[in-house]
Image 1 (spheres, rainbow, N blue to C red):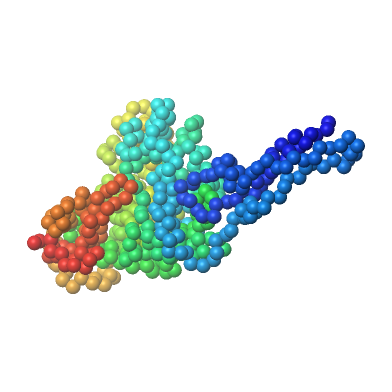
Image 2: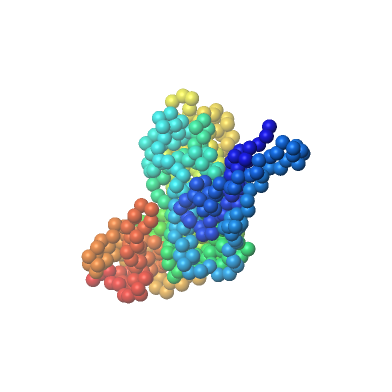
Length: 547
């Protein structure tokens, strides 16, 4: 069939438009964080897609083999031939660094700064997606809620619901890391509803932590940004995050605490706890005074029989991150293995309390560096749960466990659980032999910890009291006094006053308001517990809470 000039022209227009839109489309030169995309019409308009000149019609005498398709005219348009230019190596400009800081404090990106990883496959997705990242919804349908409750969720949620489509999670992971979610070493551990394909979790807090960018450089197209958390450089450890910029946003590569000697720094952070225990045990603080200073009241039960040698500390890296955890507990040579008082870890350069035991809530270290938890709610209830320790925010992840509930109707009272929940209705019934076998195997795996006795600690406090003597203001009294002082000075009373840390008699008090997605700090005070006086940690001005 003979091609007419009109048909050839139309074909030429189509080919040219296709080449321009799909073959030579220019990528944005500057990153726009809100993911705005140009549509096809705008791309076409930018490159001046027009109707081409009409092609000459074919002649009847022209051999079929010599017929050629009309070629599109070359456009004299430099933009059409431009390719995405990678960023130049060198320092990040001040204006760009400010924009990056804004982006890193957004809902989509801040989660990537809440865990440490050297490559994308090591990201802890529980931490990244903890606040939703803009891809979660807050409600379940009626049938979905039934499935959620049956899988172990609360019928009446205690906090906010965060619901994620599995496909949305996979797309988000791919877009933000370039990796497949299926290859993640630390995938979501939340309740998963198979049929609708939903991950569901609930909580009433946030792990959002604002950052302040300090400096940055570009190497081989990779942005390396140094930042501090909490919005302030003073007293905060430095971190470095690395990423590439794409048309869709950022592709994160790593996020690491910068210090090289992390073990030594962690040991320094633990010194305060060890010192506090040494003083407390020497002076034999009562349970109330121990708890006010955030120490375990279990220590008061072990003051007999040379407590300074009986109670001690132990360092071991149980989560395999290269930094030791600190264990506080007692040495005992009897027939039973004593439980752990407290376990501390260091994440993101800060000391964190992982667990604190109680009389009916005892923790044990496994020989394989896992953690066991024995609990008893009454004479007719007992649980033994098994955890592994990992991750920066929620440190203990359930492995399995057993539950005895004498008040639960048939098919009880023995159950197994893979979510470590004190709820027989959400556990699986087992016979007594299986229950006893699990308990026996677990107890055989308890490690015999040999604690370094507190008697070996050089106590820095010079005005040690005789054992049993206590004094000074309590945490509650200091917090109320701090609120009164701030209100008197400024005319405003913050919503929250809490003790942030205790170093001997020096108590650090934080006054702030919870704004939902962040905290608004009013003041930091460092106060001597005995005098009620100290300094404003920000301005350095003297503070007298007793006036």
